[in-house]
Image (tube, rainbow over all chains, first blue to last red; front, side):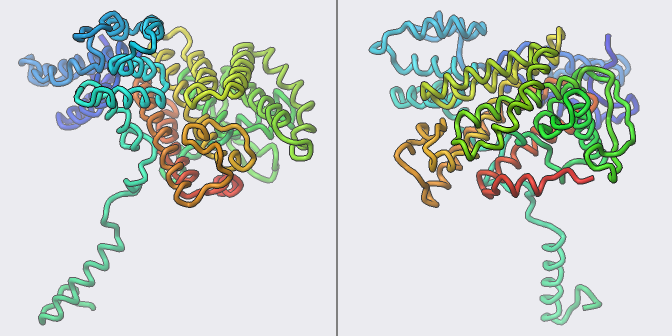
Length: 211
Length: 304
């Protein structure tokens, strides 16, 4: 087996805290939620398993053979937008998408005549486009599905995800979030201190003796 | 189409910046060595990124070498050399992409405007043939991207379809870097797809206003219903930039997961910087600060 410390990218002399931190960062990176709609799912799962095992091994070793970590279930599973079995007329398409057979799913969808294209059709077509990386058309299809069936949680979750990815929170530039965020820089600190000093002086005290 | 993929300088460590510069200089030297000194003008940040990624993925054995800048012998320069094919491939790619870009300009623009391109084209076409001969995969990928692009634009396709050729080209190139190792080639392919898509969309967003004025094709025109407009009001411009930014952000969000799956030893932090900071910064400069192209290039010169 590979060195568990190497897997987590820490030195064997790292403290428990450092190991936990490294594990958490990696778990965030490989979290299955991010890969549920992508062909990278298997790889991400493998990586996740690898770091889980490494973390378990290290904690077990450090506890002198004590019981391993039980928190694994926290990162197992994850969700997938398209359920293999929906109560619908497109079960075959759903199972193809779940199995990653995007071309087959698309072929069936394209064969559906326009008058039979309901909200679910638009949702599934959107899912197919999304997996192919055609993000703009996927978004259009999701929003069409939501218009046709506003109450459906599955469709609105997909649309929400597509919209959220445009905000820049998940990468890219977010015009509303300042890149060098943090409301307090050294200038602010100085001016606040001077203000506080003035206030104190008004009341007869002194915060900064030299001014 | 060039120069969008670059690091965010102020967030690089000094060491990382030196490394980036040395890779850039070595690529310049390789271009001169393989394709003659005129090929040095094709040097770009995008191809530097390709070289960096190649070095990182193949875990190439690199050596640092001190020397003098080949363009300006007064300057001292360091070069990161590699025994492998990394720079040779990046140089071939640089020549090929520039060649196709020039051909595209000659076909699209009027005689006087494209005069410079017309003169440079015969010079470059021999070099491009040589590059395609040495690396058939690169030659074919570039050729195919150009043909598909033309087809998509002629049929007035949507944003996604227009971005597809560039995206597929990069996914092919990146996948090839991973070789037979599935744990590398699969994420690389996906990463390449979205990086290519991002480059195309960024270029389209950058050109949007010029294209509107000239009536040239741009996939965002029909997307935002601007087909009867020549100029945008300030308000419209803000809205359009915001919408372009959203499309770009969605693309970046797909680029990060595959990148996370790659464990890159050398240059990993520079590559992360490019994707996580350089790319957002580029979106900011173009879509929110409206820094024009000339100024951008000037402000970001690699300083020795």
